Image (tube, rainbow, N blue to C red; front, side):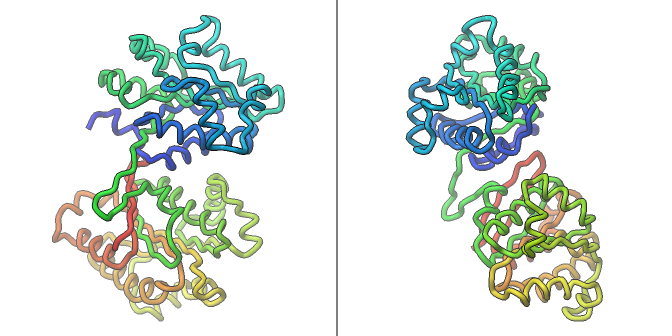
Length: 403
């Protein structure tokens, strides 16, 4: 695998939109898309949200369709978006990519900078730019494009979010070195891959998957990077809260730290803790599980879970366990599986919707050994769960139901 491929985040359209909507001002992303249908789905979802909800100006530079067809698609898929009105008010600006990048020499980045500053002056929150760079390959100016992108910072010092759109067939024309430069000069690189089905199995991206988990399903999450696991777990919690489900979050992290991180992931922590739907507990990771009754009572987990399950039985409320039991030694693995079978599976299976997370970065090399302790542990876990999420590094991953 080339180094630049390690720096890209493979995602579906929903994950890409999540990254875009979570982007802060100053963001400068590269987005590689496979076809016109995908980019239409992307901009027709992103643009209305930024204009109507986030009070932004949006600049769009299409290449593989005309400016008029862009207007038509936006209007057809968003009947409540008055495209003509927003264009007159200059909250939506649609300029053909050829004109944007090869038009007046005084425009380009100076124009975008002035537009971002103008947005703040008129009471807007900022500027979003969706710029398709297809004009450069069309003009046989790929080397100029690499130079232009390299001259821009990975993060802008402006109230602006820039998304550079590359059709896959255009991106494929660049050399390995050029691709590396392009990726390195952006704060984040998203590679949108079309959803595929293999037989009856349907594979989804983790952040999309957690929004479609059915009530009382139990999902296991294997992760390499704790930051990625937190975001997935928080989206699982957020989805439950939005559906009026009581949610418990158990980890060995400081409660106040978890609250701040949840707030950073757009969870209204104060609101949901005050109304009794959100409960966050610090629970140290244990090494040994003896029996269902004595061990849990001993460490306080019984009280936490009784409040959760007794007050609202069979409601499909949600709980996240962040590696409650360690899995470093064979004894710890046995203890962990005992807890999984005797408590989680028997006591919680038809009462809660559960996400259990396990770090695997330090044991990946062992998992290829089918007779090794960790490989058997993972196999046993998969037989006890309804679905699995494999969250790899660089925000890559896959999730699917286990039939």
